[in-house]
Length: 306
Image 1 (cartoon, one colour):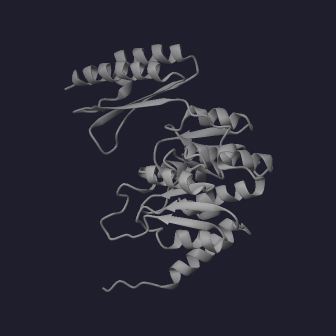
Image 2 (image 1 turned 180 degrees about the vertical axis):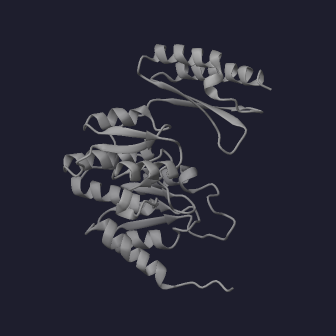
């Protein structure tokens, strides 16, 4: 059966973004750099921003079927960071290949990940009394700096497992307005039918900046990330982590030493033969030592199950 393409779909989608997401947003006088990762946003994303009045510099908008995400986009934002600073843009937007993620770059060239975006959205919503239920959804991998930033406006975090599916399940279950991941996969609940959309996310942030007159760096100033160390430990089998008594005891001691100013997270990869060790805390050298100590013991104790 031949593939049928409706040429009007893109037009209707662009109209939806402008009418629904933007709600009168005017970007005239704002310079924006967008990296489309040679992906699905390559045509419509710069077009939407230009229709809203922005001066747009578009990068990596020439997909050839082979170059998607290759050295660009949200997984490789270095080029975008350079262009934002060099061009004097107010911010940069990095999409991924299928354009469901959004990582931002502030006017100084610093990255703003999903935790920073959630901070902006939550602070704005609370200042405007938009959330009768002051909670949002974030995964267990979100930085504790997010929790600290949200506490400033009395917003708490509903934690869920890694993955956008888990975020959506939590949003639906608790009927909450927004959730997301550090990766920039932000989901605005039933505002956008529980799907991630990178450009929609960027427009929501641009609306906050335009309304408040703040720069992106100012808007994200409540968020300061704790250092994180993530180590991958190759494993041949995956016994229940709760059964690893020596590892459990070590983790308990480390968490006691962190005294609430950090955390330890152990989990298996769902797709690879790996155990992941994440330690978060205020001192990078300390947590690196802690993570290596856990990883070494984890490898030894798991090997005993072979």
